[in-house]
Length: 223
Ligand code: GRF
Image 1 (cartoon, protein in one colour):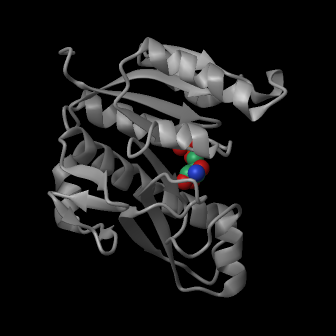
Image 2 (cartoon, rainbow, N blue to C red):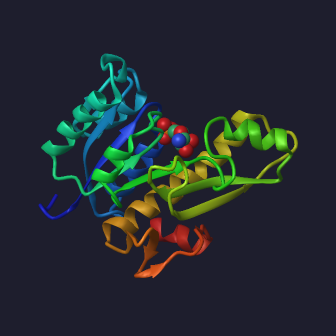
């Protein structure tokens, strides 16, 4: 990987299927980036195995070994300092980051959330969508700011909700779309097409007044 490639750190807490989709798209040549490290706050996260299989350095920073958020984040920063990281990708990372941390990496942190933000910030989005009787659901990639799940939107994908769906069935349908929109957003960032400027996400130098909506044409960029 050339020295000037886009170096990414991926933060995970669990299965790491979003991590896997980014690994796969890098390997297939759709994204010009190098995942420099994967950091998990959970020692048993399966995403660590996925990273190791792809020969990506892994770091466990268990929040339970820290008495304060500050000390947890100082360890994160120490790890990030080892690599020349351009982008932090939160992929199912279940810890809230402090404003101090977020400001340090301002404009360089992306997150994926399993809902059509601004609807359903927080947890258990799939059950809440079913309880509300919504007919449409989806996922969103956004820049991270100190307002949880409220940073500027980049791209969203929609799925239909069927009356017979269980939360797990719906989650799987949404996850399929996550595996497309997250690699796309990472690709754009690494191509310097996506940036966070003047409190807004910009794509190709134009402010995004609303999220890009995933279309079949966009999907072909990853094929
Ligand atoms: C995804 O649904 C993501 O949107 C949410 O947590 C889940 C992580 O899945 N934040 P995985 O670990 O990438 O498989």
